[in-house]
Image (cartoon, rainbow, N blue to C red; front, side, top):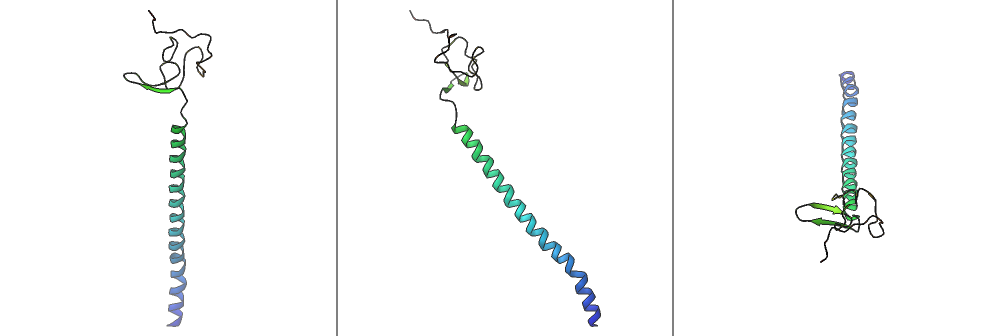
Length: 102
């Protein structure tokens, strides 16, 4: 009778240990995934907060960067103009105003 109990115990121990170790590993993986998601959200928020100084939203057009009054403005949130895409607009030699002064 003792031999049967010993054989059963030896047969049951590996699956029980495997179950507990697997459960622990799944919890760790879930914690890592949540930490990675939180880090990604922080990076996205930092990217949004670090918008260019000349970023603006124009009703009817949307978001754009650069000098909106310039004829060459790309009217895009990614590039400023076709001639000088990275800017700056302040010292651009190709600036042509679209505003008519009478």
